[in-house]
Image 1: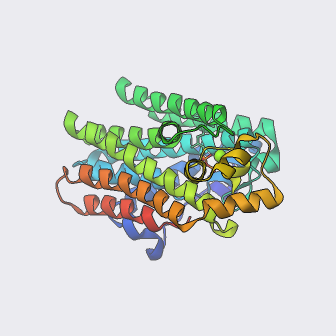
Image 2: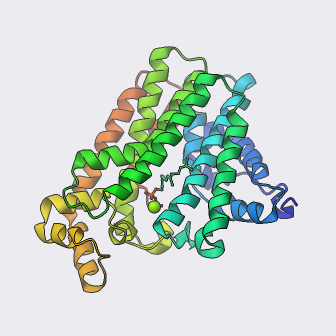
Length: 336
Ligand code: FPP
Ligand code: MG
């Protein structure tokens, strides 16, 4: 049975929400409408979970990024349907990973409300994630083999990033290189695939396609670095999940790696392998929030943003390139 609420649920974003998305507003609206339809399943439970997670929630940063890259690389309106499908596919994959990630982490709050795992439990969340994942490949399976391979390779990296993150839990010897390896796989790989596929669909030359892949890597890394800082800065009402979730889970986030480097007492607590709770948690958060460490974290994100701007400089000036530049800059003062 289809979800009756889903029909026509996609609405045009308000002027305030449009911002950097203005040049691709119509493409984004088309993507949103189709994305919503693809959440429907013959099984009501699957529809319910998918609509609960995806409808009206999430920043749609990946679709926005793909559509801007497509247009900035000269992609034409006649073929934009392909870029829209690629944008939807990546958002579906991203959504699938969130369902699975909350199962793995026991995450109870997602996007400001109880996670699907908290509401429906293990098996329904697992299957709903599989459903979204399959929908993505149903959508982009018609593309050229090399594009499908790019998407599949990104998914392989997502799984490897998740497992590497698990392997490194509570590892007080984790280095900055380990951290970069985790975020490159678990987050930046999907942005990189998006940049590569979008430029390819736009008919760009090999050099531009490679540059847009690197752009995705840099944007994805900057995004995850800021996300990691927000995890300890909160507040919960803004970030939509409990403050300090990464620390509680023993995850080697950016502030964790920085605190390990600068505070031996933090490293000792982190290494203990048991969840850091109570007064120890408050002490650890206070160390991680030290202004000098936050500034260092922001500087590392800014390094990635500089790389991204350098790659953009190779594209012809256009409103799309300007929006990509603004999207990069927005990361530095993003609050959610
Ligand atoms: C969320 O990041 C998690 C990811 C970006 C990757 C999750 C990958 C998997 C679960 C592997 C399964 C993959 C597929 C293709 C279905 P986060 O944990 O930093 O964010 P959070 O704090 O919001 O949970
Ligand atoms: Mg997580």
